[in-house]
Amino acid sequence: MNIVGISGSLREGSFNLALLREMQKLAPSGMEITVADIGSLPLYNSDLETEFPPEALALKQKVENADGIIIATPEFNRMIPGALSNAIDWLSRPYGKNSLAGKIVLVAGVSVGKIGTAIAQSQLKHTLLYLDARVIGQPELYLGPAAEVFAMSDDQAKAYHDAPGPMKNESVKELVAKALETLAARVQK
Image (tube, rainbow, N blue to C red; front, side):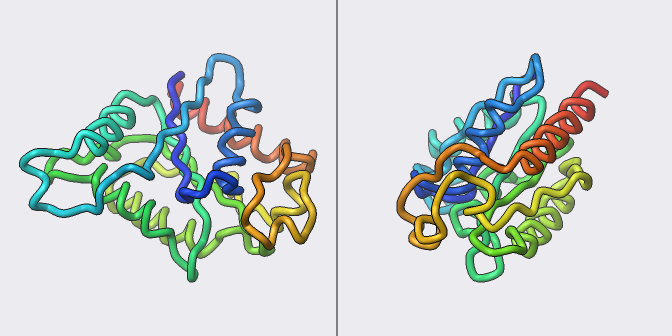
């Protein structure tokens, strides 16, 4: 089972990239999660659709060849980050060649706060549903505070510079494992 993970954060020490890496470890037997890079995508411009940028084409092909998608998004200013929005724009274009249509998508997010990217995830799910993706509704993965999810200090979590340690919260691990099992079951249907 080929799953593509996309982190909405470009930061190397990103909590959401760390979540995807932990998901790789927690993946059920037979599931392989590959993390796709969205940091090299040019800004979406419809003038570029006639000669699709190679980075955007590579991302589209990864998603099209995947059995499912995981998107781990931070929340910037109560919305999804611009980099993730840009990636979705490229994936949905050109008109009639939407790579997200029909794809099973698990949405997750980690933040320093307790609401765990809930607003960004809501917006992202709305957009994905519009693009005809098959979004998993339950379980929801609004994870936070990051210092309670990963091995790290509160100061480290608030500084946004160091990569967090491994996932330390056993109940979060169980929830994430359950979400991955749900993804696997949806893909197998």
